[in-house]
Length: 172
Image 1 (cartoon, rainbow, N blue to C red):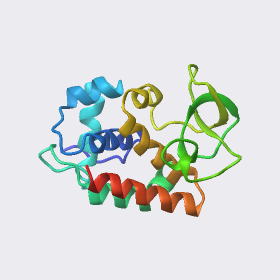
Image 2: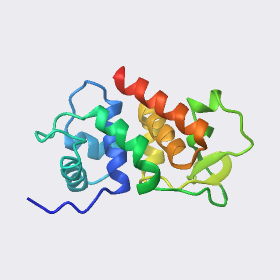
Image 3: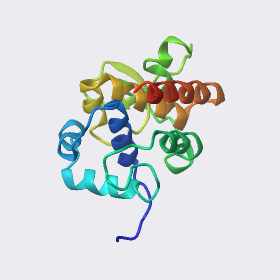
Image 4: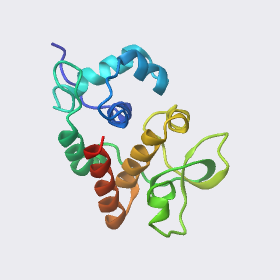
């Protein structure tokens, strides 16, 4: 068995992609295509998530409670993010749905993305291909934007994001 060397940012994306599928079965090859991450990286990601208890040892089941606990207790410390310079991109965190409709803010956060049409402070995505993947999968987009709210948000935003993630995981 390989030595566990810690989680990588795209591991969170892989886990949230699996969560976005709900109870539907999934294949690593499908995840690779949908996320534009190589199949070997998907396999490595899932293998890193097994010892952490985030995915079952049979590589078929997401441990939703463990994922929620990781997002709540670890995400902001393991993959912290500070808003960067103004750039054009795709809205994230509280600037994207579903928090966009509930939080009024003068700050707009975006993932830098050349085809984006919103200007805001740059938030580095957990994976470079994340904007494209999110544009193809609205459920993934909501989950990742909520996760970004945990990474960069204030206390109220983080709490709201966690509640919304929990609701989505329970209903999936």
